[in-house]
Image 1 (cartoon, rainbow, N blue to C red):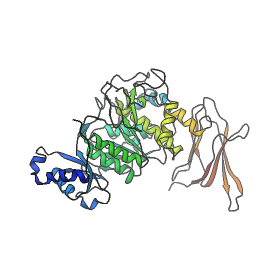
Image 2: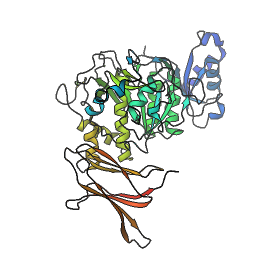
Image 3: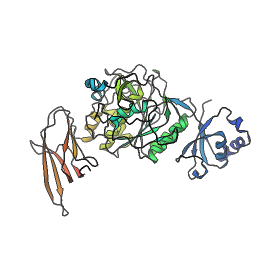
Image 4: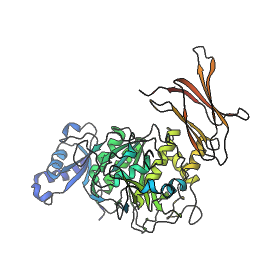
Length: 468
């Protein structure tokens, strides 16, 4: 019989109360634990350090909470593992520096601009094995939480989480550039080695939106629909989605039509893996959970504190889509899941059968085309300076060179405007430029030097402050 979330109702409470008169050993002689959802306002009945609506309890505590009518539902907890066969496939601390062209193929395949501003202002939760303070994650790792040991030490005990983080937001300063290098990553550690618990993931999902303000969540993990804990995981994902988070998940590496959660859920973006030729990874699952595919075979990412390695599997395809979503939300923060899915599907590179198919989903991710649609100006984009920076970023996402002026305009208190500075720019095809901008409160324009026509939308009230 399929296991379900056991909801606590007035009708069922009398039956559940019978549990309270049984010896604890008869409830869970094997030490079984339970995922619970607390009733709103019932937090005072809790015992433990974590806040939030989800928790993990033993049989004795479950009985106490049921007696206090403090639960909406409960379900037996479940262990799960990462879906990947090997982590990593190959390690080499000099790999990226020695073969830059070889390592850049995933970003080239998805049309990702080499723009360090992409993702700026977007927080991404990475529910994984933690993240090491790698040189290529400098400046993008925010404080997170270790749900395994209930402390703030999110150092990676496996390498899986660090690799995932690098593919999302590697800064490129030392070797690896991610799909959204400007994004801020929040590591939420729920795995030791390759093992985790559904209860911890449920807690992390709630904290991602309630405590850490994340609008994108990467879940390079999978759980069978036949597993205990699956419905609890589903409820926790819905909780995060209802609060505006976009969830991206790996579809799993069984090489079969078996579907896994959370990728199978409505509005979760499930990701399969392809190799550099665009062929499906032979172990990538193929079913209705596949929304997109992305590079996931021999992709290079971060290893340890300063090394690099090759990785393989849908766990490492999902971060490219997560980075793409973060990049898109940095341009359109208000874009909801329906808009993002439409953009991703409409601009994917179609492979396999025409249109949707269970192997490629809607096709291979193409971030470049999605960004071109969002900018609305043939891919030419001006990104604002970040906090404490005096550099703006100009991206030429076209196949032709541009001759442009970057113009800074000030506005006085009566509404009068005056040009304060102009910077000539000549970005080549598909090139991005860092542009030094003077201190001040400017309206920034990018216009054609040939005819003075604006090349993209102006940036209003760009407050530029010198680094301190």
